[in-house]
Image 1 (tube, rainbow, N blue to C red):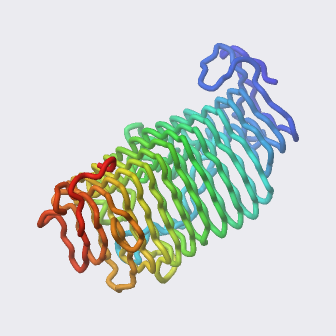
Image 2 (cartoon, rainbow, N blue to C red; image 1 turned 180 degrees about the vertical axis):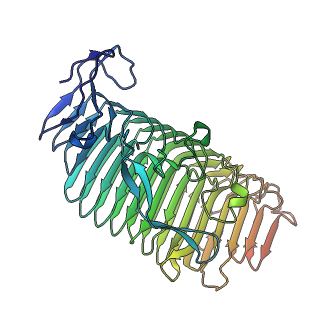
Image 3 (spheres, rainbow, N blue to C red; image 1 turned 120 degrees about the horizontal axis):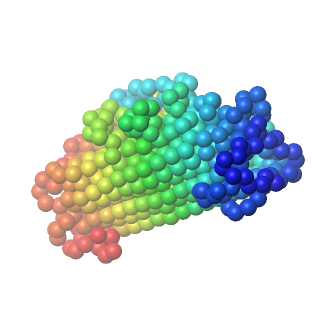
Amino acid sequence: MVLPASTTVPPLNGGIALKRNQTLIGAGPAVPGARLRAEPRIENTQRTHHHGDAIELADGARVENLVVGPAYRGGIYGINVTNVLVHGNDVSATNSSCTTGFVVQPFVLPTMAPGVGAPFSSGLANGWAAIMIDASHATERALITGNYVHDSACADGIDVRASGRAQMAVRVLHNRVTRLREGQSQQSVLAIGMQTTGRSSLTAIVDGNTETYIGNAIYDGQGDADSEGLFANAAGHSVLAERASRNTFAHGLGHLSANCFEAAASNGGPTMHIGLSHSSCQDVVGDILEADNLSRDATLTFRVEHVVAEHSTFSGAEAFHQVEPGDDGDCMLEVASGAASTTSVQIEHSRLAHCVADGLGVVSNVVDGSGPVSRLGFNIENSQLIDNQQSNLRVANVTPVITLDGRIAGSDLARSEGNAVILEDLDTTGGTHARLDFGGGSLGSAGRNCIYGGRPLTAEVVGYSASARDDWWGQPGGPSPGQVEAVRGRLDTAHPLARPPAPTC
């Protein structure tokens, strides 16, 4: 037990390495964000003690109600430990050494030129996290709950990494993460990060967390950050399953790659199953949500339910839109750039609105491996994709996709400063088989969508054939002449609704 001491008294310095089944607890009132006159404090400013970590975990260890930091490296760290509990701590000012921790695995970033990508062969380096759990071979379980992680200049918030053949199950619950900046020697900063490599597996339940003011803009003198609220990254033949719920994210600061939640399959053919439900993402510089399948032979699914994703602010969105398929301010981006990959997004009872690019962008360009994407799909039900500046829905592929399935039912795609719906098959080989069903088509959509209000067009179709029957086009009788334009393609707008479908519009 660590007793509270006045803030005028130096904290315990040098760090503590726990033994098996030990509990380290701070006495007195709950400390997270409390600003108490007397606090149970631990720091480690010495790199020679415990690698510079303030607290080292062991199997069965519990760390509770401590004020942790400053720290030369991590605040609370464990490797190959199981049955650990990290609860109710206040952790700040960690990683003064700016040591690299989480590294986003190497990937090739696609452009909009067929087969052309920009390789990031070293990945993207992040600072060592305030709270971090690693596993290289063990079977691990961990609970990280009720912590307040804040105010660090070169540190991630909470990171969990599995490598080798490790098998991990982690719950990250009811933590607050705020005011983390990207260090000048780093390339990214994560509030809560999950990663698998090798043949490892990780199952993560992430519930009730809050991430605010993650990253930094150039006005603070450090340069723009690549900031992330929730981040999931997989490589190799690993498996990562993350279910996030009741998450609140606001004010993602930095450059065009800032996101509320990004899931990225980097290389090697991993499997990722991601879910986000009953959550809010507000005010992000880049794409708010991203499902990035950048790896050949990889599978990535991303399910979005009861989510509000609003207000992206990237100022260069329109020009950048022509260069790179993402990082331009979409409410949600789905991208497939790996040969033989499978990617799907499900959106239900959600609102994607007021973004500077697309409500949902679905794009494909193979730059990892050779041959077509195996499958690229999206399904939107009972949702709003409205009031976005470039389009509410954009589907575009520049290299072949064996099966491209898109279904929309009972959803509002009204109003856009650009064309409300843009469908572009830009693959000149003719190797894409697309089934786009917005009503009355082969995927069973009953329609009842609202599609109107774009400028200058409501719908622009190039190369695809799509069905949009039984929808509302802003007036009885269907779209007016000049409201829909099709080039080398067709949009079936038969049986238009005579009145707006309730409660869709």
